Length: 315
Image 1 (cartoon, rainbow, N blue to C red):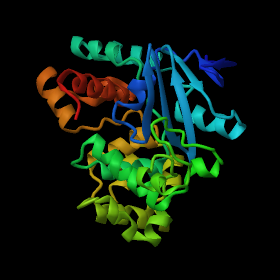
Image 2 (image 1 turned 90 degrees about the vertical axis):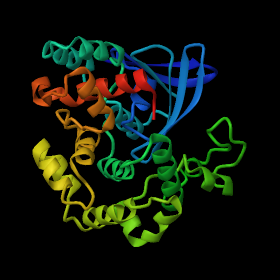
Image 3 (image 1 turned 60 degrees about the horizontal axis):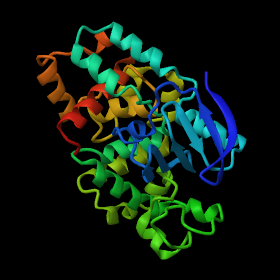
């Protein structure tokens, strides 16, 4: 059970959420499940990030595991957004213990220990779908760059909308809304499917490559409702989620599984990419049945994915 309190930290009024188990802000944001984050501070055991979720700028720090420090105004809308995004009500330690109880693999148990601070974020389904289409045959730095470019092309500057007097990024000395902001793209809202469909050429400056036609098809199907993300969310069925998402051009098993896991909270989803194939071949003799890990196989997947990337080097 998490607890909330107010305090002044690092000279700023903050809302502190504690009791989040082993939650690690860095491992959660930088494990490959999300792409819209910027690390602002990393010193003396303290980290701070700026991220964007549900159309809001979120300034969040951490000084110890299981605690998050929010520096934004704690409105009812903001509280609902961050609670949903960071899954305050989900007991990830109970999930981890469930996974451990289902495996004889000492390597997986070690991965679950090393990566126990990962929380599966509940991201906006459309943003997740779009982002993981971008992720195909791509590395994380370039994915993030493409998404920032697309957001600055279509989105609203959230710093300017909040009437901030200066850029929230400590390394930028500019006023929100200036030309420099367009080149940065960090503080912009994510475009809707309709915005993309109304101006498809707006994607081209980001150099999406072969993914362009997939992004347009996704925008068309979602905007027109032939693939209803609302209906998929309401069904809350992993099989149905995968079936419907794969109707979109260029969305195969891997992308659909990522969207199911990170956008629709289908925690049994088990995306397999080159890192996962490497882990399965190396540490599971080429055989790992995700169903053996139960209804939280997707959390186990993140333990494996995060651990092997840290063992063998990030992309």
